[in-house]
Image (cartoon, rainbow, N blue to C red; front, side):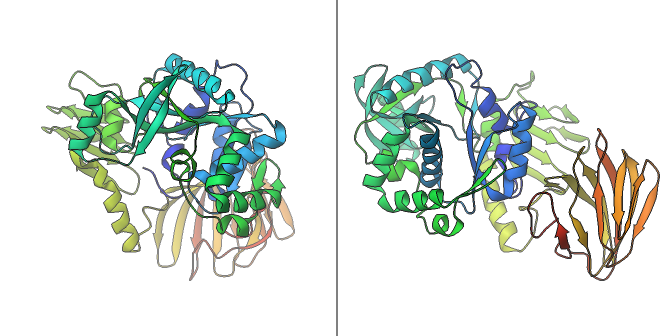
Length: 454
């Protein structure tokens, strides 16, 4: 379900909101919070912006990374942004792919961590270990301080025997990857312990470009920045690091098995989403996106159905999905990149059918949005309106179409599709020609500042 073009953070796995949306919404009720700063990849900017608007944050500040450089550079950019608003700003750093079910405990932990951070500590949250997990790093606590502890050391992911010893000792926590610290305190520690990261991120920030609510650090400076985790670059080596214990129903949803653990279950301990029927099945998870899925006479399985792929796995082997993704990539397949539905800033499209000289798409254009003014060298297009109102530009003509009306866009014609209405516009597009790739677009004007791609 997670693809390169539509990552896990944007998926709705537990309720009607995505993991990203839930990360922001679970902070409701905490006092003194400024508007969130989101750091994400350039390619996901419109998806993230749209999801934030859906939950009441239309003007959220988005810092766009041209490439991924791990958490230390990302947090450095956020700290630099916060400094310009308030030199004494305190940062609450939250990965956007976690599940937390006990919000009162989370809020209490944040307040405790903030108290430590205002005293000059770099604070991390330690999850009270419920089991000897080998997929998490661990934090060993030292002497108590206020409502937390000094950190003795950070430990890499252990084997099962060592993890059991950590849990039995009562001195270790799972490393959550969530932090609270004063922005200036973090930047000072970064300059001391990872000076190249500090140098390149500051250069990228100072030479940034602002486009509407998008903040684009200088690409060259950021690409030259070393990629390191914040744990390795700062937290494991800095002085004054503290840990606040947290028991808040936390999970990082690292596998389908971990999602099953935190999900509501039926009487047979099954978890389902979509059109699913179980018969004589237990301890299983089944997600169905497009059609009926039935499971009969099985135990501890994971079945996930999407428009272009089906996964069937033993629950205990669900981590091996990562191996399958590598195999897809190595073989040149595209399933790991995009879903059948591809999102664009104006809406989305789905490929319904395609052959050597034809391709059929279902296209949805959001109210008030429009595609770029463009033309194609190799293909012609037929558009049929399924619902809504379409405003069509074709060379020197501009006209509107409604449901069941159609038009023809000749090869080489300058054209644009837009939605002037207040409801979603859906059309069927039939392409024909010798080459039907997405790169056969000569863009003449674009409302979203894009140069290539639809």
